[in-house]
Each structure stands twice: as C-alpha cells, then as structure tokens.
Amino acid sequence: MAAAKARPERSMVVNGLSVDIEDWFQVGAFERTIARDDWDSLLPRVERNSQLVIDLFGRTGAKATFFTLGWVAERYPSLIRRIVDAGHELASHGWDHVRVFTMTPDQFRDDIRRTRVLLEDLAGQKVTGYRAPSFSIDQRTPWAHEILAEEGYAYSSSVAPVAHDHYGWPEAPRYAFAPVKNSPLIELPVTTAKWCGRTIAAGGGGFFRLLPYVFSRWAIRQVNADERPAIFYFHPWEIDPGQPRVANAPLRSRLRHYARLGAMEAKLERVIREFRWGRVDAVAASEAARAA
Image (cartoon, rainbow, N blue to C red; front, side):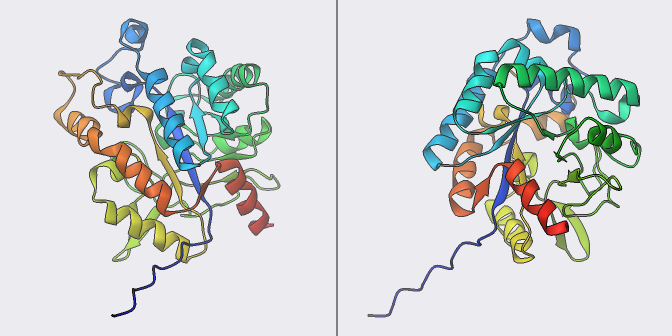
C-alpha cells in the first residue's frame, strides 16, 4: 500500500483576526440610501449576529479583535462585556461609521475620544487599537495618524493599500509601518496579495465572501511565506442571510452586500481552522518589535 501523503505543516506565523462591529444598515454601501437619522427605527441585528461570531470563535478556540462602533456599544453594553469576558480585544471603529476623509482633524479627534471613553467605561480596560470606517485613512488625511499617536493609540489598522471605488491608498506599504516619526504607533494595513505585478485586495470581507476559498488560502499563504501576518476582517452581518433587503440601493451595492451570505460562516470556520490566528494587539506588538 502506498504511503499516505503527509499534510504540509501550518505556518508558524500568527495572523490577525478581526471583526468590524456594525449593523447591516451602517455599511458604506448604503450610506447614500439609508439616512443616519433612520438608524434607530430599523430592525437591529448586530447583537444577534455578533453573538454568533463569539460562538464561532468559541468552538474554534480563536481569539480576535472586535473593532466596535461607539453607536453600537452605547445601545448594547452587555455585548461589549461578552466580547471582553470571552478573552477578545475590544478596539475602536469610531462612533458612527463616518469616513475619516470626510472629517476635519478636530472632528476626528472628538470622534475617537468619544468612542474610546465609552468603550473603556463599558469594558473596564484600556482600548489601544483603532480601525477607520471603510479603511478611510489615506493620502487625503496626513493628520489622522498623528492624532492617533497624540491620543495614545498603540496601533491602527485603517489602510487598504489598493485601488478601490470606495477606498484605498495604493502607494501605502503592504505590511506594517510606522506612520509618525518618533512615535511607537504602528499601522497594520489590511492584507493584500501580489499577482502579475499588481496588488490585489485579499484581507477578508466581501472579497473573502464572494471569491472562491482557494483564493484566500493562496493569498494568506503568500503573505505568511514572507514571514508576515495576514490582517483579516469581516462583519457580523456577513453571516446573516436573513437580514432585511434594501431594495432601493444601487444594484452594484446590493450584489456586493447580499451575495453568498449563507456560505460565509462555513468559510470562516474553515479559514480559522486552517491558519493560526490571534488578537490584533498581539500582532501589532510583534510587528512593532520587528521594526525596532
């Protein structure tokens, strides 16, 4: 009998696993269709869906970072305590999903301060990480990293080094970098891969949900082969095929938002079990030590 082919060992690199805590009606794809003033009148799903994510991490043994909107935390304080009690990192996603490049520096500072105060009060622990809504720190906001450093954040994961119709900073480094001179603040861009000389998005979210699983596996392996961690993200609404439909949203937005929701949870469990994952604060500390 032929000997069984040995399975290749998993990379020893620990990747950053993260969740952007926002409800189905708060996404960038619907920001011109659903008014912010209407949010409180819509059917909330974020607490239910976030608990499903906590349960998924529980059965796979994964620890992750929950980048959380202040708007959500204010309305669901028990969810915040469940996240922290399960051993996950609580980090800031800003107050109510306003893109950074639409704010003034003063507005941005007020936004991250307000959110951090609430999150730390609810969690009883320090918040050291930040992710901009829709990865909206880019070449238009040279002041954003400086403000994060001044406010004492240890890391940001707010840059997408790609060209995209909703966001992107193609000139940014693909891997962790220090965006502010003489500051320990580190930026962890969302994961990309290189293909035929192009930089392509590969860090989770809709790309993970819509594309074949083999693409994400290839991309994460490529990054790990460089001995660098992947920075992966998704949203709780992405595992909720029963969420309300926004019929008057643009067709492109609807296709992106609703496609393959029913397949997402199984794909997530698969990628969590296949690779090594940890909280983003731990990955940031490791990458900062590498750069020192």
